[in-house]
Length: 345
Image (tube, rainbow, N blue to C red; front, side, top):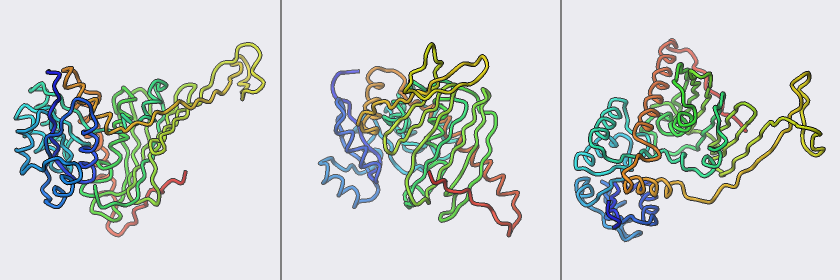
């Protein structure tokens, strides 16, 4: 790949598409050649704000660019990405990878056959709070996640599992390198036609259990995950960008008089509780994922979040949706469906 700037075009000029365009302009080695959105008003506003031309069609963006950033509604991810790959373009696809498992599987086949670089926008992998926790994550056995959002009509074209929980599914799958053996789930559609609040319990072959709750009808926002593993507890707040690590370490010799020490009794000895709060750098996660994608294209290497990663999260999301549907089918008409409680933490 030449050291010249890579030409990138952006499909979608909605809330997230505008942010992608803004951040792409700051990535060294990228040249934003244009964008497309079917809404003329959005095109005019974004073009005026950033001085980037609004191109007349999806095809026009693909022809002008070497890299295509798909930030359209989920329902059109498959069509846009397939069209871009058919023209030999490297593709960044916002999460979720696609709307259905069949669409996702076809995208994976196309990417693997073409050898193109395809990255999926699971942006929380680049969240600096999660990145600060990664070195300490060693075989967690219990994971708890809460992703709560105040209602916003944007995103309600898909269930909350594909809209919000899919972020945490990717984080769990990237941390727990084991096969999913069982999925239990429940959810309720409160204000839209698909579930707005959902809970999933995911069990793995290595004994790990992940309990995830996602809601888009909460009174406050929360994006928090807790990881419990042998001798350590790790808390990651992806909203406030804070990471806390609590470790249990064996006490050798006389304990520190100022340390919190537990006497486990018998031959188990004493353990000291150590508190760590890693420094979390102030970085923009969307800028970092676009920078990472650009670097992978230049190097001809696999991106940090591969299309296979995106497909794994999509497939697990649909397993959760299937379990929820099965539970709803068991409820007789007129029966009351209990709503999972929104945690107050």
